[in-house]
Length: 531
Image (cartoon, rainbow, N blue to C red; front, side):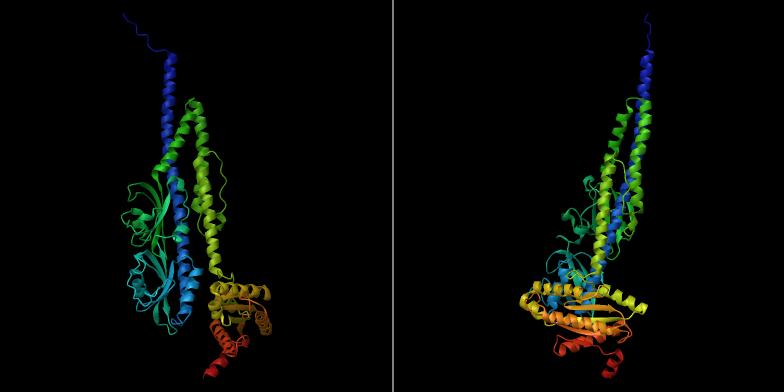
């Protein structure tokens, strides 16, 4: 008769303990994996959403700046579309707006009048591409759908602004093209994503669902309307979705619309890369838990809390981060236990610094003239509008370089630019710190001198004129100035009248021999004389 010896108690307890520890490890590992996955999913959505919103806001601002620049230049050129320096003006505009591959002017019949990339065969052609036809039809500032240019056979988008003559009649449009398959503004803005190492990337789609920017340049122009995130963002929506993209990859996608263009940006991260991060954490937990249950319980409680803390801090920071919230630029400090959290912290820090720099650069570009560093016309209008609204008196000097076209024709545009910068630097030196110096456009400059005393402005004008007449310029010789001077409210009751009487004084200076200062006539005197 065989006696069942059974199992030793030590072995049974050991087995139970081992089984309990193993079961506890499995259960806790499973729970930790699920929680960490949710946390990483949420954090990834938040980071992608912040990135998409920031890029959308930056691109939206860029388009607004492009349309405003085209509109300002169009107003200046529309006074005479047959002017001899039309091509030079377009070239000068493109040099100051490098995001355009070409800049062109089209009349209301769709005929190409001039372009920075103009060839003899192109001039006078009637444009039949979708972008120009859309601009002629809508007659408003716009960003076109992508189309293939009939002249260059390139896939492009066009930014345009309408042109009107002095009576307000529509006479055509000025446009700038961006070639999608070449280095362009989208590659500049989307130069970095939250974390490229984990497979994250972003792309831009048009309102029709066509890819305008994608890290894989061969996909530019491809229609991706069936993508759930794309269909929502081109409808004007924003948010986050877990989707399967057109290539069958499971993605965590966030999206935001680009309002001025009707486009959208989608930033996405592969789910697989997020799950890899969660799996690494589980393996770490298992290694800490195996020695004993008590050690496992103590370590896992401490570890989860420590590992979650930096992710929570980064998530809270990402939730509050917006393009206009300047107080949120300082990232929270985190400990160095979690590799993924450290990498996310570094990537988010780079992104915040990058976007802050972008916003500061765009703000500076919107206020100043890129060639001379002086205030531009928009900033000048703000000064004048503010002073008039406050009832503050000021003088206005409108000055124009004499025979500047001959300088460009004789010495070249590079020397012409040096002359403009030479004048800008001397104006800073010759004028007071509180005086506002602006480049109005081309070779025309404006100086605003606050104060009641018009005589002080005349003295400054004569000082500037005399200095230019007696000082060698970058051409090696003298380049003189003609100046028209006026005062608010002594000569006019509003900005429009003030500029008109100052321009008329400048006109007289030009026609009375140049290299002189002419004082404006009061607005009432000008009207009486015209009658």
